Length: 216
Ligand SMILES: NC(=O)c1ccc[n+]([C@@H]2O[C@H](COP(=O)([O-])OP(=O)(O)OC[C@H]3O[C@@H](n4cnc5c(N)ncnc54)[C@H](OP(=O)(O)O)[C@@H]3O)[C@@H](O)[C@H]2O)c1
Image (tube, rainbow, N blue to C red; front, side, top):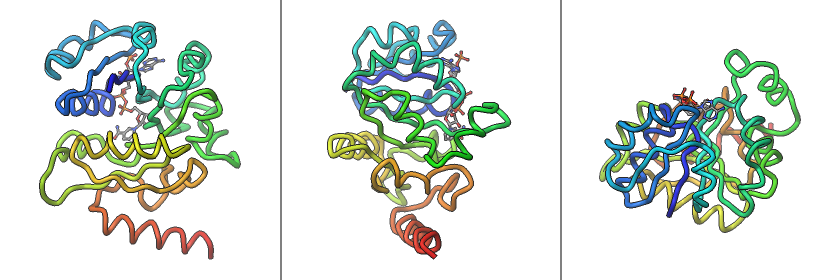
């Protein structure tokens, strides 16, 4: 697949490297694409560094959002039309201290963080993934043959479910399907599974326990 990386820091940089290694075509982007040239070089021949606008002009099959949550408003205002029928993989998390009032509003709202992203990019097909794993584990624990870690993910429809699973498995993690975007609340900050890496059996148990607790 051709994958546009919007925000190429700890999360986008590492995921882009892994996908390039797995044979995908990767376009790293940020507001400062010249600073991404050595990252793209390290990622190998399947990767290059481009501006955010060029990433959209390249009509990738999927776009990873790995930007600070506050940038979602700006990126959606500028480019939401370009996401028409594209897959978005949303790895962002709202942190009021970093992202300001808009993140606090989302935390207080009756929708979860990914539903907010999906509202902003309403013509895209949104998947939530890679927001619960810490960057160091994402960097160091991909492509394992043993003690594989699992990545929880949620998807808007069957197509997103299949693509999310493939993009997780292609880089050596097990994919654990949480459900629809409204089910992804248990992937948000402060939830039990957030910031924790574990193998799929343990994750399944923890998700079931958390759901049982939430149902009371
Ligand atoms: N770090 C973690 O452990 C972790 C884990 C899971 C999820 N997340 C979430 O993933 C997202 C990214 O986190 P990160 O740790 O990867 O952050 P990071 O290392 O600071 O990287 C952010 C990237 O986004 C770019 N960026 C910032 N504003 C932008 C804009 N308006 N338009 C385009 N690009 C922009 C930055 O480059 P320029 O400033 O040059 O544009 C940089 O490449 C956050 O929402 C975070 O909560 C983080």
